[in-house]
Length: 127
Length: 127
DNA sequence: CATAACAGTATCCTTTTCGACACTATGAGC
DNA sequence: GCTCATAGTGTCGAAAAGGATACTGTTATG
Picture 1 (cartoon, rainbow over the protein chains, first blue to last red):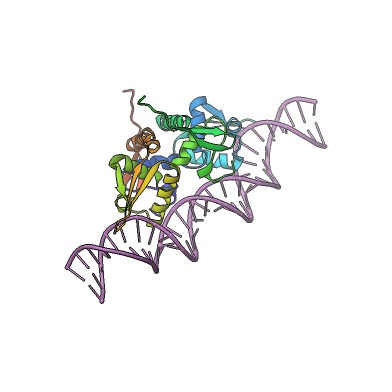
Picture 2: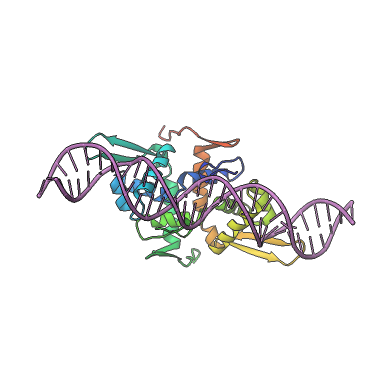
């Protein structure tokens, strides 16, 4: 498996886990998909505003990769100033349970305060 | 957010998604967790056998990172030959829904054949 | 005596990813 | 004529991740 993670694959139990990860891997793909799931359709700069610290170049790159993977569609309107809409494809939409599971775990387990990340105490669900 | 992905965090909607990803990020963490979820407890070499192409060094590294993140426990038995057991902590166990969502999506959407990965056609769930 | 199993380390090197920064084109508004 | 907004590209370099390979120490087994 000496391949970049983005092209990782192999036949072994657990492969489906890895191959799914390979789709949402990349520093921003998870959040991009999440925001598209909330908003439906977003323009380039709308996404930028929702991802305060990603650079233009990185956002473009991640969006292109997601498009290539078939998870989102890119619609260019030939107007000036340019307008480009991003939206989930059905395949991207099918990732909703995955993204929502990620979000749920984060909500329950991680505190995002300021710029560091702390684990919340475990809840005792048997009580 | 100019930080290694593994230490990524920030305050913005969607952060929980990213912070969860930061826990299972790393080329092998997903599968490791998955196998521990199936097996309960595994020794070092049992894991190696389940991850055919990971090197010893990488496996060690990923395991240490998972341990540091509080997702698994490492139990050393002072015997010869050495014996070390790896098992999920409650926190690691709490990732089960996430890992299973990843696996489910992979099962439904990806074909792992030989050494390349192909997308399955989308199923029409409304039919 | 040689070998194998266990659970690793150490060293070195390559690939990949990420980020900073500068640059493009067009038209509208002032 | 200058500036702004839009949606990008191009180039460069640093940092992180990952991989290859060799090595350690102990005991049981043949």
